[in-house]
Image (cartoon, rainbow, N blue to C red; front, side, top):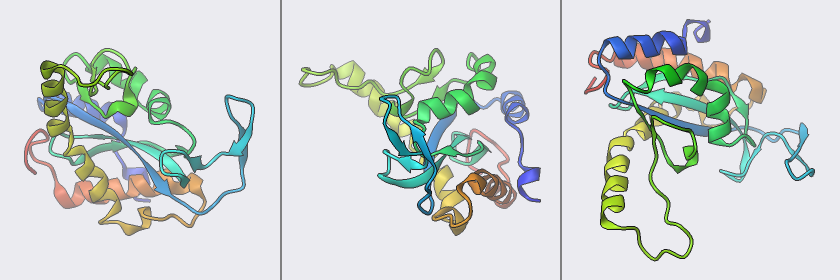
Length: 199
């Protein structure tokens, strides 16, 4: 019942744009779940566990979230199996709807979203063989990290306050429903008045 009241992505983006939110934060999390026996075939042709996440070296489901600059979640995606990389999950659940809004509201993300395209700002990785990035690139990376770090708060609000998302023992396909229900409760509890600022 609560999950059905969770806001949709397009509506939340329109609202954020109307309220003058300067930028958004995109992040992903693998929610821990019990071992699942469902198999799939990897890109290399090997049989692998569908819900095993290399990111956490454990079984789980990948959910994506868009967050206000203050760290309060704006929207949470449905779950994808743990073996889906953050960028692939974002392409499937977020990017198509988000692209028209990127001119007015750029998105800050971690290096896992490198290659997401125009409007996404991710830290620059150090190329192979380079001892140290130049001072301008290091300063840019530090600024991005300092602005994006509050995005971690959003998943803390979802998973630490609502502990059922720390380890899901139900079917992993239900993680998205649980996350959307938690989102409704977080938005009710925090009631962000100024989405770009302090709640």
